[in-house]
Length: 137
Image (cartoon, rainbow, N blue to C red; front, side, top):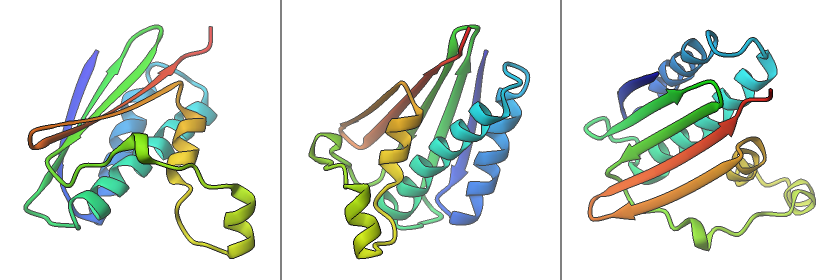
């Protein structure tokens, strides 16, 4: 099954994204922990795209596609904002974040821990993030 949601790049739309993801996952798994983790991962990516890639510009949009089957779930998130080079991402040390009391910077670390696969790509004026999680048997 495939579901789509399009939202404007406003932080207030993050609740719509969280609700949408939860609603689409509930019929496919009763594991609340997995649902919450997946909602968190998608929320983190969408928040980064809204804030950093699109500067909270309500004239810009994010498209979220959720594909669910018996094996797992794939999230495809696309936008037309500033490109993000995932290869240049340096994972922060949790100890360093705690010691410096730095706020932020660990969202992608969490996403990478939650998801089985995380991919970013950009071509022309379009950016795509693919998140995949296999369901436990």
